[in-house]
Length: 135
Image 1 (cartoon, rainbow, N blue to C red):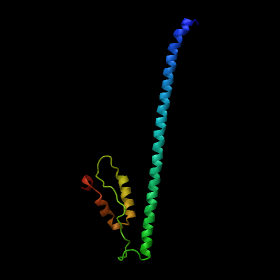
Image 2: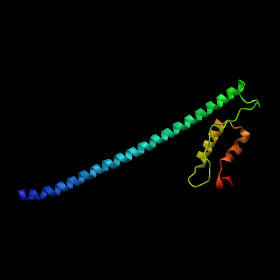
Image 3: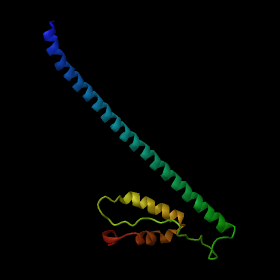
Image 4: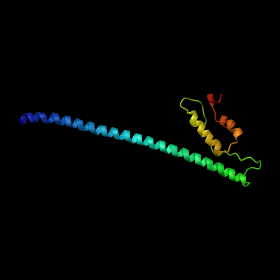
């Protein structure tokens, strides 16, 4: 290979090498971003599941405390366990994007935490219905 051939060969192939290097770096960045996003989603799901377990455990504990207080005489004088209004729930409007099953699960947890009597569950749930969902 002559020096003239080498002089024309090097710039062309160096440009190709630089383009390939840029593409490899771009692919690495894209992979890292996708990896971070997927990892973040997985961690969020774990946290969500943990929070649900903790909420259920706390609801059970609060109910047990209410029952224990009732048994030892610190409950209401009427003889039935006292109903609370410490936990609140979001309203359900029946709009697109609202998940009825998630909402019902939250309402059930709220009703359990607040020690709502079985015969009042439907009435309490109905209070949290709005707009078309209430009709």
